[in-house]
Length: 125
Image 1 (cartoon, one colour):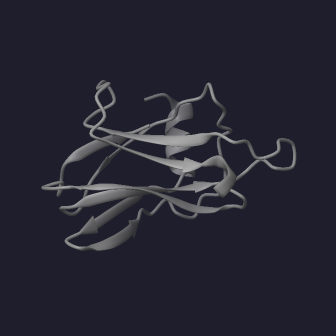
Image 2 (cartoon, helix red, strand yellow):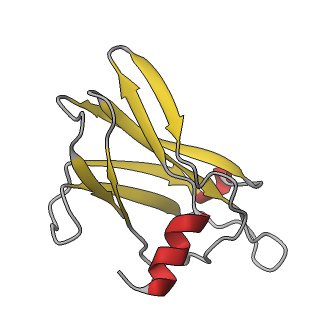
């Protein structure tokens, strides 16, 4: 993991979600970070994490639109959940319209729950 990528990990909020029928949201100790990385249609970023509960059903990220220099586009942000960074097979995917990212905030990417996810390692990009 490069130092730049490690810095990104400290700056982006990561959410581990759910158990059972309810969606439990748990934030890491890195939640107070305020710096962001610029995403565009040629940038892919990723993060490994360990699920803390069975039924992982989503990931939440802190996003900050760059509307001062770039108008909101018509694209989508697509989250790919995989078993590890080397895998190219998606376990789940979720998407969010770029137009919905209209202010700084936490945006959730929900997908079908992952059974038996407790203490399992995952990677999203």
